[in-house]
Image 1 (cartoon, helix red, strand yellow):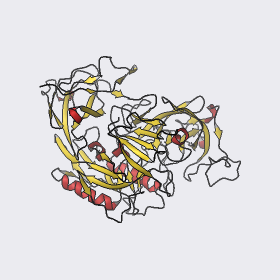
Image 2 (cartoon, helix red, strand yellow):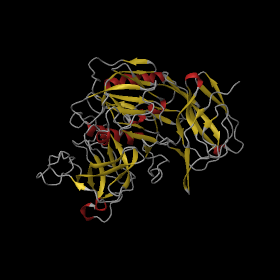
Image 3 (spheres, helix red, strand yellow):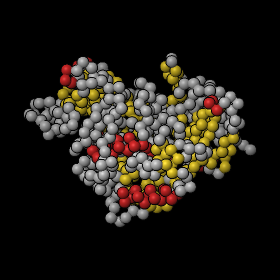
Image 4 (tube, one colour):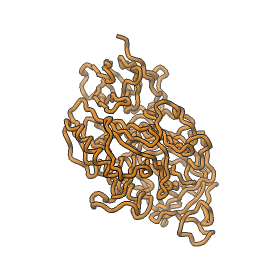
Amino acid sequence: MRPPPIARLTPVARMDAGGWQPPPAACLTRLRAWTLAACGLLQQAAHVDLGAGGLLRPHAWTPVGGGLLQPCVWTPGGRRLTRSCAFPAAGPDLWQCFNASSSRGGPRSAVTRRCLLLLRRAWICSSGVTNDRLPVVHRLSQCWPPNGADKGSNPSPSDVYHQDVSRIRSLFAGRTAAGPADVLAPAPAPSAGGVTLPTNGTPVAQAPGVQDYTVLVGYGTPAQTFPMGLETSFGLSLLRCKPCAAGSSSCDPAFDTTKSSTFTRVPCGSPNCRSSNCSSPSSVCPLPFSELRGEVVQDVLTLTPSSAGAVHDFTFGCVAVNQPSTRPVVGVLDLSRDSRSVPSRLATPGTPAFSYCLPLARGSSHGFLSIGANPPNYGGSDVQHAPLVINPDFPNMYFIDLVGISLGGKDIPIPPYVNTANTTAIDVVAKFTHLNPAVYLPLRDAFREDMKEYPTAPPFHGLDTCYNFTGLNEFTIPLVRFKFGNGESFLVFGDQMLYYEDPTVGPFSVACLAFTAFPGEEQYNVIGSLAQTTTEVVYDVSGGKVGFIPFSC
């Protein structure tokens, strides 16, 4: 029998005590599907499926060390791969187990345990970043270059849910009704510093310090480089600044305004000042968020590596801080529809405003952020689009025209009184997908019916549909498909549908459906960041649409 085709891998780099090292030229260029050959540095596929023509399509990666690799035989059967490996004589502690998903556009996804004999070394991190893309990493990733992975533990499903609720309650302030106390409990404070804010009537719930996805940018002249969280709703980028407030002697990390030759303050009379607390046109513009102390300023924003280069006279908020922070995130980079956002400053006619691909939390690859450039695969057959629509109540946010949802290929009935046309937002900070209860409840019930053969686990507050996959070698889940007003759709795969209590253990542990009811009586839907991971999301504002390119990072 002929071996299946070869799947190409993105070249990766290795990080050790000597810094970042390129891989050997003969290594990491291709993965033999018939036998995984030993290689000094090897990146292994965490999810592999048989696409059109039987081609192996790697669409996510797990971080593993290079070393000795016992060959394993992959046997294709339909659209599923089955592995056959000898039991390791060296002991089970040398085995690296991962998971292979077999879905490729179908309504269901199977997750199967795979094992490889491995002598662990350093983490291997792929970038896939070009001159038009800024690397994006998750704060828990081992590929986080400034400080290594965030030293804090992975947040529990309950903690993430409460952070999401705090975020959504602040974004939709004044338009969400109060519910039970345990549902609308405030989000826990960041575990290691940051700036924690109340959430009454402001679009800023906690800033900066809670964003999962970060990108390195520079502020000032000469540039001071900081990791910034991605943000799609604020309307203004924010950054910790010094001199420190209240006479404090230390508030690092923070942007030192005294060391930038191009730093200026924005006066109240400027069009870039939208604060209602100005005393006179010539006074310094205060931040428009009542819970934050600071001022609106301008300086040079440097985006490298990126063809966008530098943005002169970039408007952002300098947040006054009076204590150090051990969190790596120093601010938020605004990508909203506001005229002061980064895409608004850099977008050119005929190109999308921006796009991003969010990596999985503990994956070995970077995601990316691209601003004002055409994605290379934007015209491909795999690309699906959703019409962009305006919601006048939330002009900075991105809403899409959602008209239906299916699960496992079967439509979920949406009551006729439910308006989804301009009430479905895409958010990069909220992790879970929050749906109008009239939409979520039938989706949840259908998911439970389909998954009734698997043992359940106790719920985590708003995550009320959980399972214990411990000890299993395979499970299959139905997939969610969002349907849009233009007849196109976006398929959410298994890794994007489930949140694991301990992601380091992997899928064969306790997992919850990462969908929940919108926390309030208003009819809104929020598609969270987990559902978007590994997909390039293209914000084609001038074209009036959002594109979805699967398996992009």
